[in-house]
Length: 256
Image (cartoon, rainbow, N blue to C red; front, top):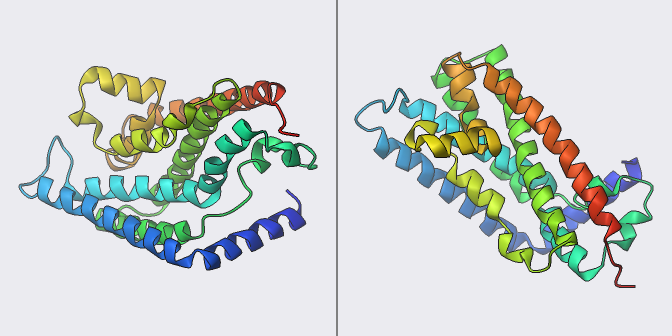
């Protein structure tokens, strides 16, 4: 994107944050409360020691890792995705098709969710703390940061595909938030799920693989193949989401 477009996005984001600062503060507080609750649940669950080979610190890393990935996605894409489904159904996408930029990206990057900056700093800071508690440093820390970006990309791509289905089907607003719900549900040690559920959400929709990567690859230092599979899956999912978007825009009907 051009410098002018990025500058416009930043100005719009700051303007919205200042206008709706009360709502923004409430959003920050609620996100903080939910994160604290998740950590307290872990403290209770692991109060008698490790469970299925997981320690309380392993669990804290998982929770803060997934929160960081979700907050990173929210920062750049949540507002765009919230508006995109409505714009598709109401035929309000004309303006993105006349821009000299990729409509795939411009449609979802019109505004940053600035409250997510604070949430990302909190979850990221806590994750760094728990990584130090687990004596994880250097290359392994860098690898986990890369995994945060990869998991944010997974959330984006899944949402992009679900929202793009509005080009074909009306009434899909009922699916709004389904990706976030699945990601939240899968933010648990994979061993607590039945085998069939594990297989489904490890390989078909790998949200369970995403949440467990730090434990499997970095902490236990095994199952390195998972990271390779995950990267290849994301590459394929990106190409598929681009194909769905391209096909969908051909069906788009302008309100004008």
